[in-house]
Length: 169
Image 1 (cartoon, one colour):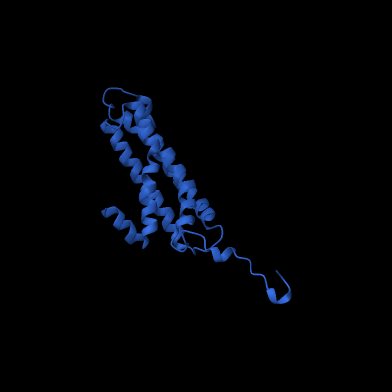
Image 2: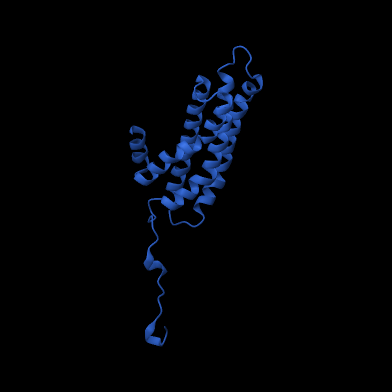
């Protein structure tokens, strides 16, 4: 609850705080699925990996939504430009972490790395889904639920405005 309130204070929006709060579990789905291959989340290394992925996913979502919020909400093509600017840093940070844990994946279950193997598997799986969520889901949902937008379309915007005084229908 405290984290939700901190997100609301940071973005001054209940919608954006809820958006980030609800996207974080979606970002860790890959980590949970890959954890099932290494004995489930019961392994200490797998749990540490999920926490690491959760933190990286939170950082990516907060940075993306922060960048989106600094621009004019009515700006056309805003999400595409922000993603184009941020995609490199998101992908490179994921690849860097994957490169750091890749040796533990190849070492397998060698003596002394029993906790690191599940950690590496969960982090790699989780970073794949976390990166995909950050690049494709966060911008779409931000555009849909940003504070400057109404959650439902205004029906008055879609009514025809025919001028009946000049013989129009």
